[in-house]
Image (cartoon, rainbow over all chains, first blue to last red; front, top):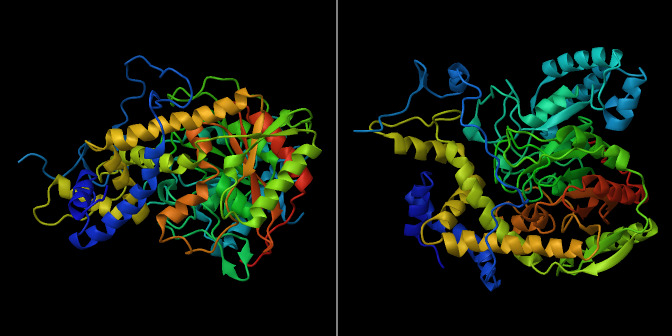
Length: 95
Length: 492
């Protein structure tokens, strides 16, 4: 499988990382080197093997669906690049 | 007394309790050593005021005979740990200015035990790297040099390794996703242990690949690793993968007696092109284990060669998901917007500016292997191969072995810049360590010798799940026989 510029552009878009057009060929080349390296996984017979979900045999714990620590809006917003009136502020999302 | 910063944790603990030294004196020695070591670029956010405040509190506590082992001990903390009110940015530009409002479970436990934090330590960005060269702070430098050439301290916990090897602190926290504690420990002549997955809480540690990440201590001796690991371990309801198991007294398990134990030697770890020095070191390690009364058996871990490719699917996949949170909204960097830019442009520009090239590469690889049409071919296949890698170890342990001995790294520390432009060559650094993360097992790197250039080399021991105490006992058998006392000549 060879990654072309279109695929590299699509992946960058999915990852929400801006990549300049001029940088796409180099990026596609890097993808190809890494994916070429992982290609050897196709040699392995995985017939009947379940994909691992948890490396230690344990059931995922659950907890009551209740507020444990609330009323900390100030702390939650303290590191925001733009916080106003108790909210995170972002550019217009809906036209 | 001079050079207090050169003490081990165990020696400092004994001197503190005997009243021979104070934590303030010990901490001041470490802060002074740090000031003099700017050339190593190991400590990127020094916290001298906090350290002295903690040291004074520790001295009061020691005076009241209420002193856990780590009380008054100056430690460095990897920048990946969230520390309340102190910069915590995973060596990334995207977390520029981030000061957490909370304390990670590990640092909470260390501080509850009376430990002193002298600063935050350099690392590869988001722990992605094997040379500390992907850091937004610039690379850390190994205190060991080769004919005047600056060497990498390894990565991702390169600042931790450099700081401990150069005696800037008595020990440090590290994290290990594919070898990031053990490889830098081996490159700098110190000890580092990655515990069993689930042993140490991940809460408040900035996530890279959640199914692989584990924190552990990086120390000057195996005994120190036992002491510090015990303080870091324990069940945490805030980490859903944290194991609800009692934490043994690891130090008390260092009996020195490993007679009658069986050590497996995996044939697949004999790599083509492995330097003679590594082969020789491994042979010496085998002889040391036999001298200690252990029996050696050859074992096979047939899927070893697929560990790195498996890792380079699983880890980027998890990273692409974990790092989706860096969107310029809640914390850290937000790009300047152009006229007419909407929220998508904000995300794309913020992430392009904030992430370094290796992080972008891995996030995009992860995005690709998880994308529609490729998920089964890459991600699910890798998870299947991971199950086989884990089964290799289960079969080996079921055959009656107690631990596995391997080299820690395929080479000694290499010059900075040498592998930076070839990602796949860089990835090969983790060839002996990455299997352990994929299988969730404990692994320890212990310094065992010098190569012909006078650079430190480490051996790795891999243990059964939850058997960190026994594993450290094996490591101490190596440590006491190797008699590794070499220190880098001070040039910084």
